[in-house]
Image (cartoon, rainbow, N blue to C red):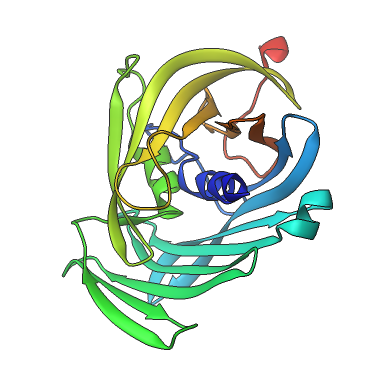
Length: 260
């Protein structure tokens, strides 16, 4: 059941979009995903919502991500995850990150505050009543802000198959290298019809959360919204998949192939 956790994390970490003249999102944007095992057994849900907030007298985007198991799987592996980030509207860099999870009885309750100027992360482990200070890479992102940062900063017009995109990310008190391998374009069938997509393989290069040998694939819509439409993890037996099933308050028009 660790694959369920991986999918939930990827939904929050690696959903991405790409550089354009105007922002790809705005306040009120909301996504809901359904997770399934081998495309038929429902495993859970996840949501992402864009809000606004003021933090230290600065205007911030406040992103709230939630993930939970449902149905039969919930009875033997219960997941209830909450992720939040506050990042500056101007530089797209996070100032505060919250991770509160319960995954099959494994719990964490972390609050991380980022000092981007001095390259420090102040990690408060509420569960263990422990505080630490960790040096970070310049312009560090957290696992939620990475998605929104890439939505507005990654060029796609010049991407070629097998190109790699890398971002420095901070997670659970450690620095990680997050990488996306571009696999090309593909038309996929979704809840909303057939959609032109950009296909990626996400990796976290160092640490224990993801491993490069995981066969993970991500599809996003080839438009200004860059909706995260599907994430799939191939398993030894079957597969685990997350599909976008609902959304609202998109900033840009969304069209299927039939409507083009």
